[in-house]
Image (tube, rainbow, N blue to C red; front, side, top):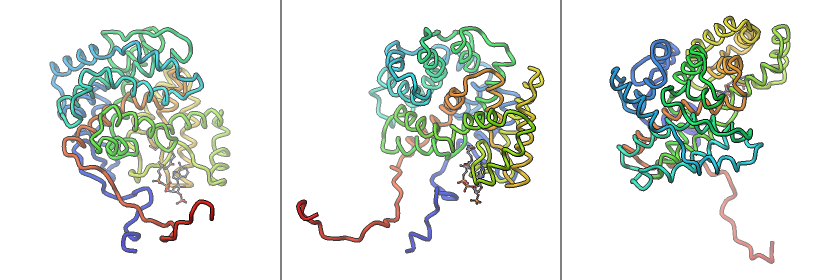
Length: 378
Ligand SMILES: CC(C)(COP(=O)(O)OP(=O)(O)OC[C@H]1O[C@@H](n2cnc3c(N)ncnc32)[C@H](O)[C@@H]1OP(=O)(O)O)[C@@H](O)C(=O)NCCC(=O)NCCS
């Protein structure tokens, strides 16, 4: 019975490891990547800086950042056989399932494929390759699923702009690329969330980074995790008008239904990422002359605060920001993965650098030991 008292459903509040990658300051609702407030990186930096910080442990100086960007540009292309495999996935597949296939197929083409998973330097190289290729897999995966030809990555564009370029075949406006870049900074890392923990569990058996990432993609797809940004947008579309927002949310709450894009296991007052993203989404709406989604969001936020004391998480404003940028809804969670590849990889590297297989206990509540009846006596 002692073990039962220690059990915490959903592992809420359970310490499952030690990490130097990110911290959540619950009192101040701050997310910190290796000592730096994500707010500062989002406002003054870029996704590549966040990626360098997460993967290599320090902020890059100007020369290091330039070199890192060149390295990513050199690693962005994907072998043709990977596109062929992805193209064969049934067209009704969610892009996250297609992405999982792409990452799994990519593994054997990595020049370090045969290197032991415990090799730190090879893991960093693999992580950089994956970071470079994720946007390509998502953008061209979408194109393949729609019968469009692959667009090769642009050698001079960074991750966010390149993603949009490959998706649409043309260079994006600067503010559009900046909006996606900011979302990538905010989505990059978040401690022992479900997908990251899943990646750590997978590699703790001394499996490779590609296997860890494929597991993480499957986890991120879930609607309580990364999938929430797509569900939040579907909900906003269903709401349709600011007038409908209050009765819609109240109706859902009365029926004890979840409001997607609200709540968080760790934060208690707010999700600071949602603040940055929300300001950006609303500014984007003003710029595009379409403030409807921001207006609906404000009403949802007010009712959720009044009724449940809950606040939006980053997925809520990310949803209407992406919608304003005309990004297809099924790509919202894959874009999250294009960013979170950095956090996942940093955790995988950290796990393998100081590994012990993750193998928790469970409480057995099944039948007591009983005699095994022969087949013809059952
Ligand atoms: C994020 C989430 C999974 C955290 O789950 P959790 O820590 O296990 O929290 P719980 O599900 O125990 O929620 C605690 C209470 O708040 C309520 N609650 C939490 N999130 C809610 C939401 N989005 N809408 C309505 N009620 C919510 C729960 O119903 C529960 O109420 P109760 O105590 O009356 O039963 C949860 O808030 C959620 O499902 N949110 C919607 C999905 C989402 O946006 N996910 C993205 C997370 S970044």
